[in-house]
Length: 150
Length: 75
Image (cartoon, rainbow over all chains, first blue to last red; front, side, top):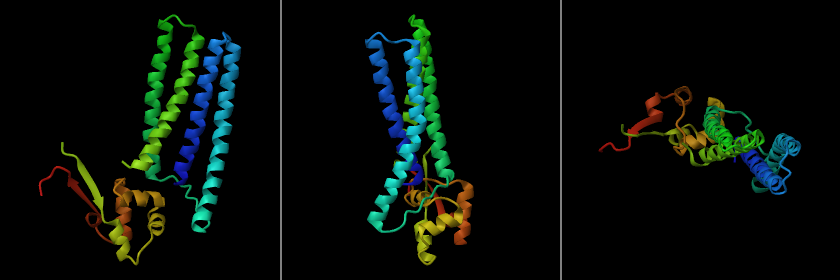
């Protein structure tokens, strides 16, 4: 697994966990009738902190673990190819396009909540949800392109 | 329009250059080894610039490294 692939796996696992955590927390807030701006802002703050710190920590862990496994299996020092060549950039762009598509659909669906008479808080809440979903979808697509080729 | 497929002889050319490793070729053309692997497995078609760089490393014309086939072409 290349340097870029490890980064994508780290990002994917982090954002999938955050998406799950966010969805469960929002459902809990709705069920317990604590769906207020204060609680939601706290949740958004948690998501932002987890997204930044989690991705960094999981990336570091993935590279260290990958290096140890490589050393054990081949008895060679791990060689890190941390350059981004044209294939990596191309796959990155394709992933970004998927993220934009999901985000666009997400924004449109979030705006629809106004049509059904929901408060702005619901719209912002679903915007964050679709933003996280877009990141997960983009990472899945990038990983697919790395594995399958194109 | 008929779909085309780009194939290459990179593996063979490496063999005839004293078994040049994928890593050595990757360093000479400025990409990662993963990209060379993907090209050899026909999982990635390189840009024109990279294709010329690879041909330059082997000292052969471009069409000796890469070839283009239409997938529904009759033999």
